[in-house]
Structures are given as C-alpha cells and as structure tokens.
Image (cartoon, rainbow, N blue to C red):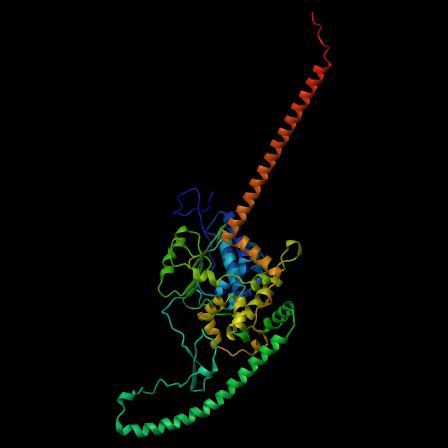
Length: 488
C-alpha cells in the first residue's frame, strides 16, 4: 500500500512517470541510472520522497556527462534491418516525412536515434533546432565567393557546372536605390553610360581574376579524375584511409549536416496531443516515432516504417525509385557480413557508413553521371536539392574533400556474383520477389507431397499386383498337383 497517500489518490493503484529535461542529447548515458532510481522510488511507496532525483540532478549539473556513441548500437540496427539499413540512411539524407511505428516505445526511440547517429556528429551537435518551428525562409540561390567580393554566381544546384554558362552579376548593396531603365532621363544617360563603362572595366578585371580561379579549380578536378581512373587501390584500402583521416577533421567538413534544423523536425516519440504538428504548414520534413494508430491515418507521410512489416510503406513511386539500391550498394552491404553469416563489429559498421557518406558527398559536389548512377542517379539528384546539402555546400570549399575519390566505395564492372546479389535482393527484400519465392516453395512442397503420395500408391499397387500374381501362381500349382479323379 502507498505510504503518505495524497488526498487526490482515490484508487488502490497509481501510475506515475519520471521525466528528466536535458539540455544535451545524453539519452543513453542517463537512462540506465535513471531507471534504477525510478525503481527504487516506486519501491519506497512514498511519492513525497523526491530527494533521490534532486541529488541525481545536482550531480549531473556539477559533473556534466559527455555524449557517448556506445549507447546506440549500429550493429543491432543492421541485424534488425539488414540491407534496408542503407535505405533508411538514404531516407534520412533526403529530408522527407517519415513515420516510425514500433513497440515498445523504448525500442522505437532507440531505433530512430541509432539511425540518426550514423550521420557523424548529428546527435551531439546537430539537434539544437530539431523541434523548432517558424516561418519558412528561402535559401538564396546565389552564393558569394567571399565576404569582400561583389561578384556572385547564379548557380543551379540540380545541374552539372558548365563553365561556358556561368553568369556574373554585380551584387547591389541594400542601401542603393534600384533604378529602372525606363525612368532614366535623357540628361542622366551620359553620366550613367560613363559609370557603366567604368563598371565594365572593373568587372573585366574581376572576371579575369575569377577565370583564373575557375581554370585552376577545373584543372585540379580533371587531374583528380585522371588520377582516379589510373588508381588500382582496392575499395577496402580506401575505406580504411577515409575513416582514419576524416574522423579527426569532421569540424572542417562542416559536419554534422543540418538535417534537423528549423522546420525539419525530429521527435523520437510524439504523443497523440501533438498530432496536429504533422499538418503544420511550416513543416518541411520530419522523422517521428509514434504508437497510436491515428498517426498512421495521416496523409502527410512520405514513408511509414511499421513493426513486423517486411516492406516500408512508401507513398510515392518517385521516392520508391530514389530509394532503390544499386548493384554497387548491394556489393557495399556485403562488406558488413563476416563468414558463417556473422556481422562485422560496431566500430567497423560505423566506419563503413562513414566512408559511404563521404564518397556520396564527394560525388554530389562534383557531379559525374557514372558515379551518380552507382549511388542511384535519381537519389543523388534529390539529395542535391535538399536544404541540408545546399547549406553544407554554401559553407565550402572543403580542401579535405579534394583527397576523396568521387566514386562509390564499391564501384566496378558487373559480374556473375552481382547477378546473384541482385536476384537475392529481389527475392528477399521486395514484395513481388517474396511472393514469387513463396510460390516456388509452395509448388515445391506440393510437388513433394504429390510425389510422395504417388510413390506410395505405386508401391501399394506394385505390392497388390505382386501378391495377386503370387496368389494366382500358387493356386495354379495347387491345381496341377491335385490328383485326377477317376471316372466311373
């Protein structure tokens, strides 16, 4: 029974929750100790004794914890989803509207956070605005070369850079009044023409300098491409080099990617009273977890991940196409497996995903159709148009990326093994493939049963005929051995 029962407690049983508000995403670090404290709190049966939690919070404030990735098991995530783990990672990068419906809630939250943790530095340093909503702000389509230049690019992020079509324009200061050509008087034309001539000369000087910069960049890119073509380094060697070097320079690569900034929401668990959040006009994207069936009925989701459902519920054919795994992707996923159906270590799995992400970023910022095809061309084009990629690109350039080969970690020529991989993927990971596989198994089982039945019938028939023949022969022998009767 409850000790020191409060006046509002009128039942024999009581339900309470313990909630801890954190300024940092230290979920895994704290959950184990908080669970023990909560159990002890309920065993006391005196809910007025909250000194346990007060001491716990004071200890946290005096000795702040540091984020530890070990509480999020990438290995467990891969065991749960296998090849689909890469599909989920690509999905997160596309900033779409994603609903997870798993149980229990602890598993739901852990699954989402572990998936998010595959993006370097995203949990400890990239979730400051993950629940922030506000008026939408359009990103500028022009990117200044640096703070002191007054020349900018008109850049289309969805097209390959063409040096013959680069347009230059002057950047107008906010304090200058905009002058329309139709309102210029005849007296002002001569003065303006002189100013325009001077501006043209300045622009020519700037353009000459800029052309030199572009030529240098172009030469470095083509040199890198030529070098890459000639390289014979194995993908596994490249993976080791990338992971070892780039983990120490993630800050210089402007990681984490801003996947969950303002209006791009992350709610590992969203209660029912926040259901209307899904239809808020300012929401660009979200990754949310829920347990109530009413969430599934909403029409805003791009994809729904449901427990014990072999297929993700993808709402559009375009997104389904973007998330298709390529042959190079299937080769890459083979690297997660050990002999005897084992799985690589936690550290190795994270290293492989880091290499995949770095290679993808390198391909996305230096577009090449062949390299894009290995990642899925429609996926790369969609990724290039995301707010997260555009923000990341606007903060460049990134000297360290010049050392990354812009190609898939498992790029290469097709072979017989690839055909087997593709067939296995279709049979195991697609609805049509599973139906076909099931039909084969049912047919095989049916034919096996029929075969055994036929064999049994034939055996019985054979035994029956043999017995009949033997019986007839025995009757014949008896008849032949019977002495003849005398006639009277």
